[in-house]
Image 1 (cartoon, rainbow, N blue to C red):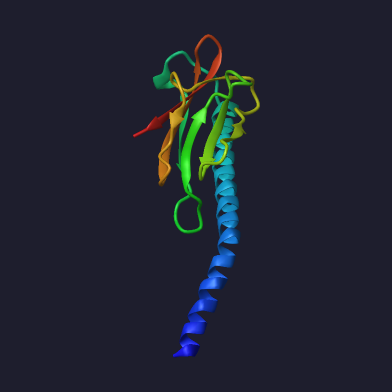
Image 2 (cartoon, rainbow, N blue to C red):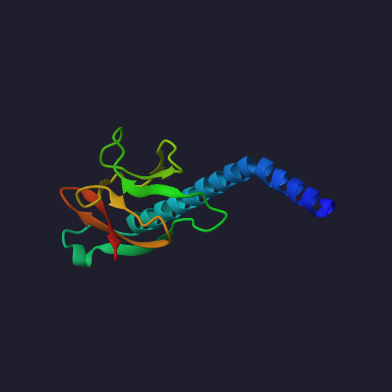
Length: 154
């Protein structure tokens, strides 16, 4: 009986000692996955911009749909907020902003490809669902100049 109690106590102590390392790894994994999603969005935008000419009619504009997957599960940290935003220091651009476990918000810039284009997020940040997949539509239109329109679908 004493051996069982000692074994349980040692297991609990080891688990408690390893939890900070597990949380650090979860946060790092989440940041890496979000970075990969920002890269995927940048490649999709670049593909639309590089292969098309902007047009006035959004229905005729070059477009693509991107599925952004927000990390979830045991290996991911809890995400308080994730959104596509216009960075305050770079108006007319787009960034992926996120906050993990109440920490300060981090921002990853998303490029718009080889051509100089403005970005239209539809009047404000595009809040993404923190628990799964989000479909994003990217259109390349001429709105007083080349503009990438980004909208969340559904």
